[in-house]
Figure 1 (spheres, rainbow, N blue to C red):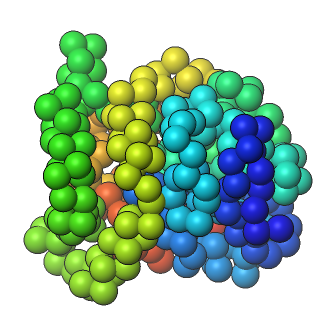
Figure 2: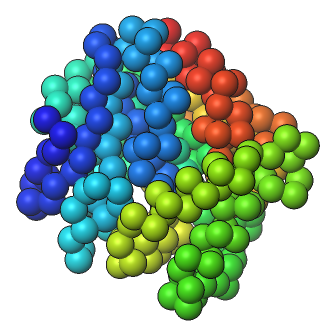
Length: 273
């Protein structure tokens, strides 16, 4: 079953590996489920059933004109879980933008079937800088992202992934091939979904969703994350979620699945077990 059709008729590409208790992985912007492959392999080898899917508009999924708000994206997650039978005794883990789907699912769908959750380099609880969120990202900076994509999307993402993976400030940065691979994943997405999702993750306030986390929640975040800075994200999320565990990766950037892949995998396995 490579595709699930959502309640609004969008085709969502699904990868379903292994057998055992289900773990659903939600990828970040502007990538696809392929970014989770090393973790999927390790979790499946460890006895879990691992499900990852391409967000609508990205990877191999359909590219409808609408539906890039978090209510719809959380509904997509619910539809994937139901269609795959992963809606009981499941763990849901979101990277970056994917953390928003986790948060909105917990509130909008009352955490149905979820026994634990994970937020990795996540945008939760609120990216935008406001009077009551002083550590957030200024609106002008978020607008620069949209402007850069509209002007020259390929060039923008070549530059974007350097900070994403810590090039220039990590002692052992990822290879240039890894950056090229991430760029190719980003270019699979449609322009409309890319812009609409940037608007959603940059301006959606998840603080009201935090009380809906009623399960053990793992929060992983790099202290040198320039894409989603830790103070307004990982630290704030952990402070607002009861029964959460914050693990800070000292000096690490945003793309932990690649820069800290082995450690991330081990932390996930330890938490899931």
